[in-house]
Image (cartoon, rainbow, N blue to C red; front, top):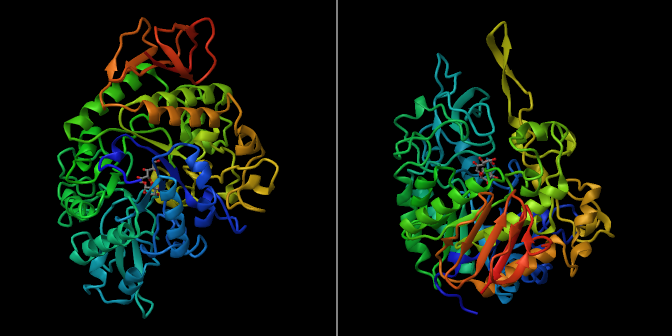
Length: 559
Ligand code: TEU
């Protein structure tokens, strides 16, 4: 079925983390054929689209976000032929497909980077990346004090062919992820080639990784100090590293390419910047949409949710976009876990303690997670769902250190102090990382690796995954899977204009809104049971008794 040009404005999009979705050949890694084998399952969720995290050839220094070849499939995950078959099967099920574009950096195994290493300073090959001479007498100090996202330095020194130390190259993330020089036209054109490569195959949309980082101020690079987190980015587009005004020129050029296709290809920016700046990436002549991570970082709190929702709808409208809603992704602690921990729990410390520093209330967490998802699905705009949410999965908080893969765990180092002075850098793990939300899905509780593959899975699954397996929830009332299926199917039927009207409630712990066709959503965060307003209840995230909505519950009504 041909979709309208604005099909994406209020879509339900499911994120697949391919290596952890379904393993068809038993090597422990999820693969493309695995996805194809689950098209019926995806269809049963009434999705509009799926977004695939990177499946390209990669050394997996950062879960595939270190891409060695942008126009191919990792041989461990399949072939381009497998990809085409998967695309065809998904399209047949009326599910569009987004692929992940990682333009800020490649893998150090990319042919261009390998060529750069072998080439002389100042060569065209080096100019595709960011190579600089070091500071100090013999160039022994990095070109700036810039910190990488996976700490410590954002610069790594190279070795010349004769064994002597050479220039340094910049990487905002791991040393295996060298940053491209986006002032270089060759780099710009190569990404356009990549976009066309996938769009020509029939890919419908693109998720753009760290979309705000591509352009850097090379004149001031030597004084750059920042890392991704913990520092404020200038709000006027003049930061040395992030969210620079010129970055938008790139996306305006991409939009022209997207619009050559029919229907136009769509895109969503991942930009960790403040809401107002984020919307610039979502302008109609740029990417069209940007992830709104505001709820993802928020406590389970009615007033905060209401404010974030109002602000984001207004901001999206002001730029001609529709809002997006996200509670989970492959980088964050799963929302069923976040909402089951005491308020203000430090998630980094909690993970480092293997979940012992605070008590997780699983029943509460799941009730709240399901209530929040149902509320999100009633909002105008596009909702992103991360694989496993629909099974009520929690974060796997107690993965053994030996099993961890995330560079966040392996690379975080802290200064070692001797008598109040920095004496060096020590490898002390400061974050456990993101593996706990990337553990392979449980499909069948009776099978090895719970039906993910046939023996092992690349990250070990805990025993409690069995209770969440698809076979345990399929077709059973009251399960999280059934709730997601019902909610997503109903949402499709009820979907209406992009407006939302708030309805006053007698309790600030309860939020209530209606959509243009009279579809109402009421969510009781934490209050006393709340009297059901007039209307026909079509779905509830939990049991309703005596005409009242209990705490941690969401209800949909129609006139
Ligand atoms: O994430 C960008 C990013 O900034 C995240 O690392 C984020 O700050 C962090 O995870 C919040 O907890 C993207 C990808 O989503 C991530 O998986 C990659 O590691 C990163 O880019 C580098 O490509």
